[in-house]
Length: 337
Image (tube, rainbow, N blue to C red; front, side, top):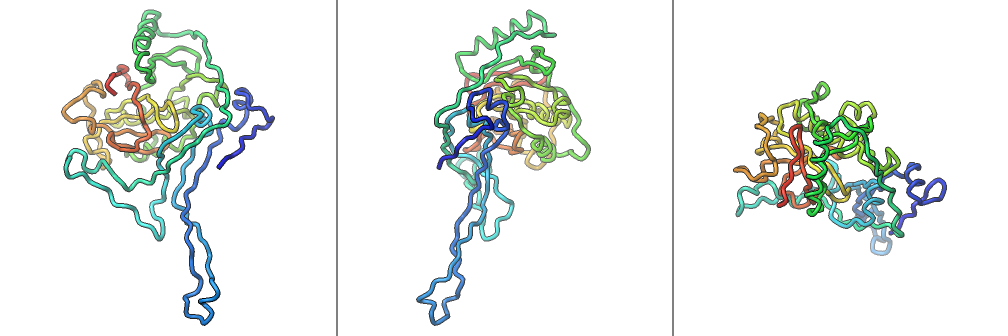
């Protein structure tokens, strides 16, 4: 199946695409089950000669993918989670599969997920917008910025999503840890589920669409709420700040996922209690990527844009690569992830 891409002025240049509304459009996919219904009970004399049937299409689920993601990735191939209703008349959910041989994996692996295999590509591929290569003023010291740059350069060989500075909305180079600070959520959002749901309802808009250029500009949580939209990192920072104000041990994770590309998740220490919405006291700041007695299942990942949560051992988790994580104290990286 193929779909034509149209722009208002007919041009597919990066500038034309960025200036048009196509940058905020999405590709919506709906999954239906086609069922044949017999309209007669077969008791009539002519039932063997005349067939009375109709076809019904029962909606099972849906998913959407921003066009900006397809444009940036050019080629998307993989299994993707479908959004399904809580109750679908005439259908039953598959039961979860629990591992008995490996107790620590119990409850973490499920075959009841609704997944869709997709292959999407652009033909021909569209040109990518140019990246901004400018030097901005900063309130950080020159010595500190020089160290930040040398640290990132020393890790370039791993080809991960690793950075420690960004551009603020005021146009200044800022250490990313400055964005993390406790922020009380609105009244009535006391649970993990409510806070996650609230942040996911804030519209998502990539930087290349918001600023008509390939750049990395971050708003603070307050600025994002005033604007009413944000990118992946800004959603993750807001959710992380809410979690911290509630006593959770939370970090912002930068990495790559399918189909989005570069993504930001919120990494939270769990110990199997977040699923019950019970808060745990925050531990002393430590490297969340470091091995400990609880193992990897100690953490839960939250996608701040969709509101979905994942265990580390989820087979079909959209996050495919961890770059680095950070909180208000430091940026952490390990080469074995």
